[in-house]
Image (cartoon, rainbow, N blue to C red; front, side):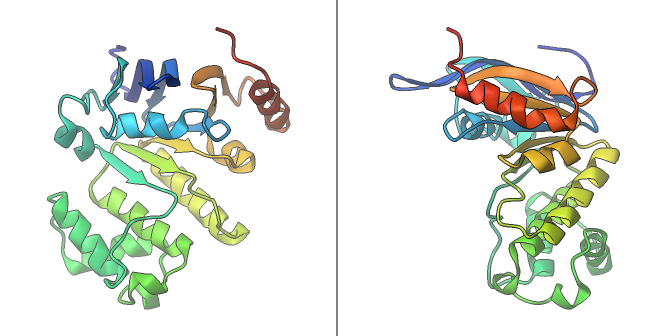
Length: 244
């Protein structure tokens, strides 16, 4: 594994089978402090399996993953201290308010702050003040995601994993979410974003990794490729059979 202290998310020779099905085959990726990496690929490409290995939900057959130097298969508690995860549908307690959810999940992570400090975090992520004390079941998806980002900021996560974060968002909410992601990257958070949204990948990511049938078939940064070319590169790879 690399010893570069700037690397927060490490994926090294990662392979995973489910019976006869090979979900991942020798995948290698890193995400550094302040970097946003977009993980692209069709359904079944291996994006979710990669995320579940990073979260410690799945044990690799071969290879390793690390979060801030910690292998979640060996020490999942310490690995998750450095990690925040925002799925496509953010899991919050629907009858609690946004503020109450933030306080609760922060305390679970052993983060103690005053009520005013928690409110300041919600202000930082641009949650409307009138919504602070309303139950989350009245929130839009974009508002729930803002609470999720506030939780990540509160626990000072070094790594943030996003799974289809802009799916179902209207253009305004998608733009607001993009601004939050860019702010976190500027603060040094390493961000891995699994997405089908090529436009948001172009707008938010510093680099792009393309998975197809469990293999890493391309890795690009936007100094190497014009953003208008990403769609054609992506389509070329997912239509091709990965070499054995």
